[in-house]
Length: 399
Image 1: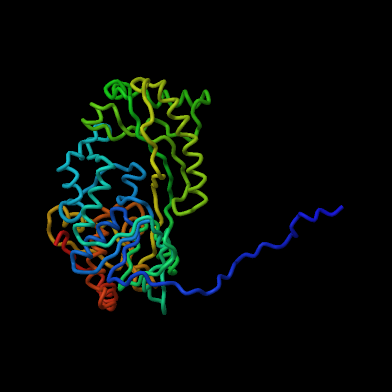
Image 2 (image 1 turned 90 degrees about the vertical axis):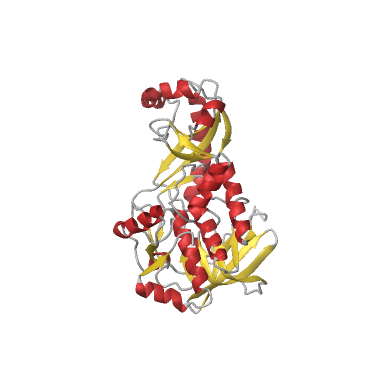
């Protein structure tokens, strides 16, 4: 008997052609910034302060990127510019303290960073669209003219003199035809905020952590994929009083932060391993009464792909950039490292910029430079080409 309810077996097409449809234009601006992490916030603020009509689009409901969302709370500030403004706003509210578990580096309250970024954007007069995804670049004759944006209100176009891709993974740049350079090593991890910690007791026993973790892996209490020790951070004076700090509960080597399948698999597995890790923590001195305050809303990413730019920022070039930032003097940066090769009308800010492998540059500083450049060139695209040809363009932080 034939099962008439069974659908006919047909070959699944490899591509699907969408019919053309008219899309309303939501707005036309001088500078469109896509991505509201530290690079995107700095880019938008810098562009607006230079007089450009600026719109910032962020897919999440808050600004700040992986700081508040992934609990990446180590704070890095240059000596001048928008990044130090963020630092000072946090410090003025008592939200920046020395992290005693990580060599005394600065740690901040991730919730406070959301407010600091929002205040900076509003004070600069930047227009803001949250819960909105910049899904595709609008490209005409090889030049990026804006982006398609989708949110609860529908799908619409935003036109711009210059677009800044601050998505973190160069998502718009890639869809506009940019090539990428992938890192030799990358990993994803899931962090959590833990309460009920006897901080003094925990730190006193920290030398025993690797052995405790190894024993737990041997007995099956912990999965082999777990870190080899307890990664405790955010141990500030306030954390000591409250008994609250952060831990990295799982890590996945070789997983790519720009690959949806890797992200999805790591998200599910990471939360499973996090529950396992929390149960293990209760057997560790100082953590006997610990409990989960909250788990990060997204994965932290170590190792990102970079766009292939008109120029690759080298370590030798990075030294005067960082020296300039720390001394408050004028900085020189190859604007060409922010411009993807063969893609006009678009700059890339943040970790996806064209940077030499292993080189770390303050993302907010790159964002500020991109924003100032975009504001200067929004009315005259040829200036971006001049910048590429000239290679080094002076940009004063905080001007």
